[in-house]
Length: 204
Image 1 (cartoon, rainbow, N blue to C red):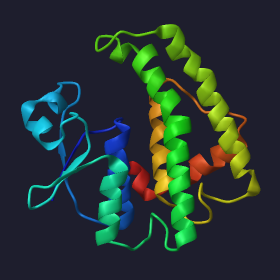
Image 2 (image 1 turned 180 degrees about the vertical axis):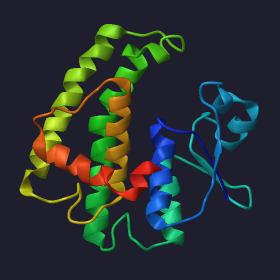
Image 3 (image 1 turned 90 degrees about the vertical axis):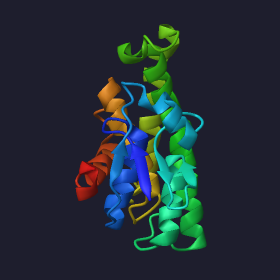
Image 4 (image 1 turned 45 degrees about the vertical axis):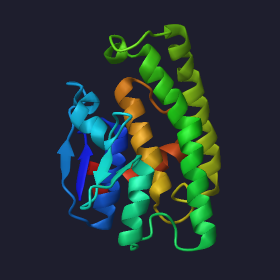
């Protein structure tokens, strides 16, 4: 298998690297340089028609894209530790939190990145007022998560670190990179972020 991705701060390839680190797998990543637009090359579009990373190419040439899908595939091959949940209830709760993070948190982060950040200004038409409006949305989502974590559970989906935490962790860290900071007074959310950031896999 060959994993095609990109170095930090690209959040989606980092999801897979953290997952691989948590599993203790040895799966080297071949870099696709985003700033040099290598992800839009004919070679990479042959792997992923949308020209995105990460993409996992199997030994028979089959390509799997989308970070969560890649991790689900790897989980099926290496089920321990169970980062997508062991029981039906755990699996449902983790899936719920993955979707919540992607829709509620990643959306304002992505819109700020696309419409308000100088690094994307040359790539598309920006609507900066809209982009900046996502600061408030991101702050509101962080405070919502702070309330959700006020029950004392250490991780998003319960007492066990999971793919939901990986998705949130990489989103929060990318948000910080582009200038969206989590509210300092959101103590429960901050505690969660400190816990996931202290794991060895966070260096991936």
